[in-house]
Length: 122
Image 1 (tube, rainbow, N blue to C red):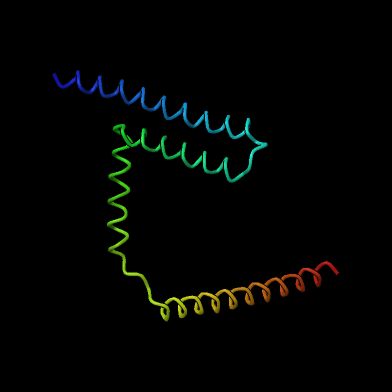
Image 2 (cartoon, rainbow, N blue to C red):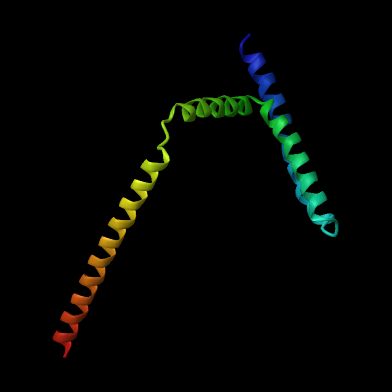
């Protein structure tokens, strides 16, 4: 009993994915065929086709899974404690200072090694 709905569902999912693929192909071909039209109109048409393709994709099993994952990711992002402006500025300054120190160290090391090799070679 449980195998029949899964098989039927996967067949319908295959049809839905073929519809999504056909919509994407129609968008690509239409964009090249109507390349003489305004970029604004072509962009609006592509956004509309992308919306329709996304709608069909979200009707599949994998599409629903991606939608659930996206919603859970958004929930987790809301839980993150983002740094305030002062913390961001301080961290950025620390990174800049450390990068400058390392750059000066590498410049000094390069200069020393160049001098040492030039002294050995003659």
